[in-house]
Image (tube, rainbow, N blue to C red; front, side):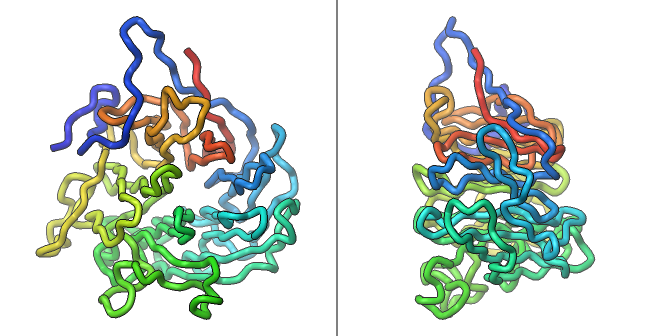
Amino acid sequence: MPRSVGALGALVLAVPLVAGTAAPAQGQAAVAITWDQAATGLAQPTQVTSARDGSGRLFVVEKQGTVRVFRDGRVRSRPYLDIRGRVRDDGEGGLLSIAFHPRFRTHPVLWAAFTTNAGDVRVARFRAATSGARRISAATGRRIITVQHPPQFTNHYGGQLAFGRSGLLFLSTGDGGGGGDPFDHGQDVSTLQGKILRIKVLGAHRDCGKAYCVPASNPFAGSTPGLGPIWLTGLRNTWRFSVDRATGDLWLGDVGQGSFEEVDHVPAGVGGWNMGWSCKEAFSTYDASRCRSGATYHDPVAAYGRDYGSSITGGFVYRGERFADLLGGHYVAGDFGSGRVFHLDGSEALTAGRLPGVTSFGEDGSNELWAVTYDGGLYRMGARG
């Protein structure tokens, strides 16, 4: 059974999460997590990330359809990528995330997830002339996959991209919007909505002659009923997930309907899990009519109610060096509505400062954590004793 965690009040844990650092010994000074502002004036940023190419650059994705470079303490005025003409950014739509080729220095390619002018979620590939180029031309864009979205709704797109350690690309998709998953997309394996997808894009044209291949180990590959790209089902709106760099595990922040926000943890290489929506919301039954006989629903590892926050922003398991003694192996995430940031160790949840309107966390090339806020701020994680 979940148990209450005093440090956060409404946040509950289902099971021990990850190997964590012991609490400070009695009499030892507590260390507080801080978020130090590095830049302002960004346009509704939705992600901060690194190409991990040794350049020291950070890339900030802006909702309107641009990607900006932060380097040496400043944001370059000219966008690194500008696809505003292809992006519809009303409601929760826009340019939602990017993912760089795992070997970007020798393969200067990135993938972008965005909402199209028709309102669907699309992943496209863009190619730079060199890894050190100051910009990527929108004309290099090539369509990879499109996930249809109900035209009457402009919310619940998901849209997070991330490469796993095996070089396969993950994509989160929302349930299609509205309230309560009106089309039951979360539980329907004949649609790509309300899912985590896993596809092969590296070398796809060589291997299967298409823009992407369906890995043979996907749970619905081949003759198994269901759409091949699906990796996980039963998700409402995974607004930010990450791949643990040490283990390959997936950590998901799934935004709740009206009562609970949840953190899901899926071990590396494990596909086919049903995370419950819209039969369940976190640990509770949401709509019993959506529950399927014989189905196995996997509970989150942590959840919290409306007295703590209202819209989770998933984060990362900390694998940096600056705060390894304090945060090594802890999952760090936050809430867009309340601004609270928390980290989970092996037995409890602890507060980690505030970031009102936090839209995304990200790692730099040294695995240190950064964050962006909807009002245009870029922040680096710090600590003070």
